[in-house]
Structures are given as structure tokens and as C-alpha cells.
Amino acid sequence: MSASATPQARPAAGLVVHPLRDGLIAAAAVILALVALDAVFLDQGALLSPVLGKVAASANYVHEFAHDGRHLLAGPCH
Image 1 (cartoon, rainbow, N blue to C red):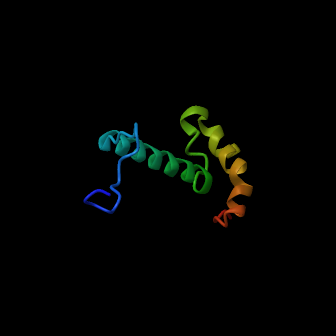
Image 2 (spheres, rainbow, N blue to C red):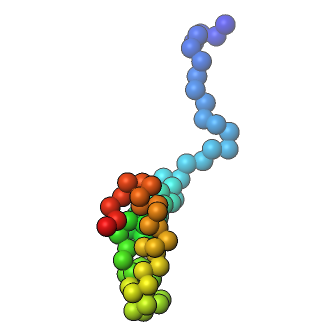
Image 3 (spheres, rainbow, N blue to C red):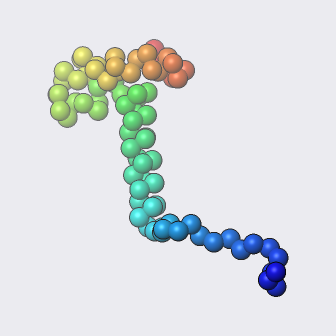
């Protein structure tokens, strides 16, 4: 036996940690998730209004698409 009886922890082969890159990826994922949550729970036509104009507010496409999902997740709707 060697002088040390406890096994030494070794990093996994090929695992490289880049704190800045990984942090930016995590931040982008959080921002994307927040935009998705806004689209599902709060949007009343504002998300598509730059593309569709006033039709987005009157037709309320995103609201109608996510309506049942809001009820499924116990989100406020009406």
C-alpha cells in the first residue's frame, strides 16, 4: 500500500471548465427562460406587436396559444 490510504479525487478526463463562457451560457439560458415565461403568462399581444402591428393585440395569438398551459400551470389568466 501507499503512504496515503485514502483515494485521491481526480478530475474527469476531457472536462474543461471555462467560467466566463459557462456563465454567459447560463445567463443566456435564464434570459431566454424569462422571455418564454413572459410569453406564456403575461403577454397580451406585446411580444408579437413589432412584427404584426395592431393585429397582435386584437387577435392575441400568444395568449390564445398558451391559454390552456396557463391553467395547467395554475397561472393567472382571467
